[in-house]
Image 1 (tube, one colour):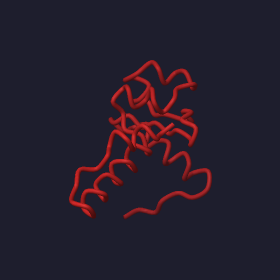
Image 2 (image 1 turned 180 degrees about the vertical axis):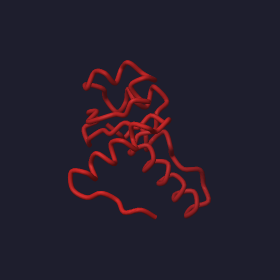
Image 3 (image 1 turned 90 degrees about the vertical axis):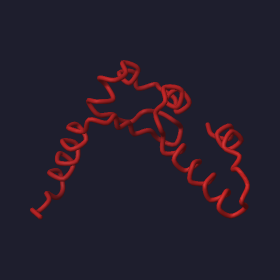
Length: 96
């Protein structure tokens, strides 16, 4: 394996990898505001050109947010622990 860059070079390296990805990658903050997105996300949806997109709007587009991943993990843990179906809708409704 080659050596990876550090400092400012590491940021440019990571940005180049994300930009080359075929999958859409969108970073949002805890309030659901879009912080940044890669080329695939921009090509796939003109909505990301606007930085005022909520997490709920992202979910409506069928994209998976970090919060959704946590909810799905929680549902699976609930099902494993209790043997009953997890309350996915109730957990999603609790999200901002």
